[in-house]
Figure 1 (cartoon, rainbow, N blue to C red):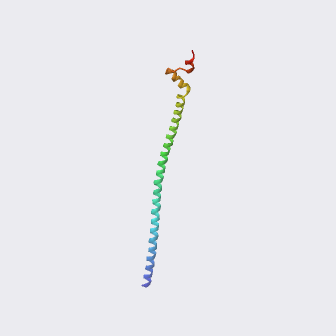
Figure 2: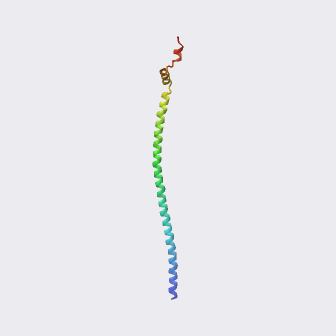
Figure 3: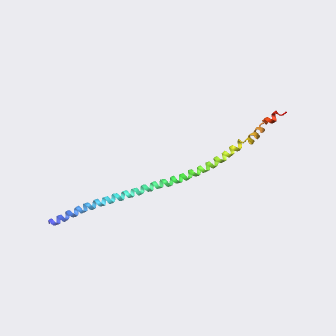
Amino acid sequence: MKDFRIVKNKNNSFNLIGKIKVKVVLAIAILVISLFFTQLVFANGLSTGGLRLAEIEDDIKKLEAENRILKNQIANESSLATLSAEAGDLGFKNYLQATTP
């Protein structure tokens, strides 16, 4: 009977070690799965952020093109030829023409 108890105690100690190993493996598996889902959440956030960034870049290109067009219109409207033509339409005379008899 003593032999049976010794074998039984060895089996209990083996089961105890086995249970610890199972708990460690289970904890590592849960950690890996949670890290995987965390990575999925961050990847999803990056992909939607990338789409928003592409939209912003398109808006920047459109605004830069519009800005170039407006600069050209400002340069055209403020040119000397345009200003003198508008002054003539408003009744202003050229200084040289006004002083000649």
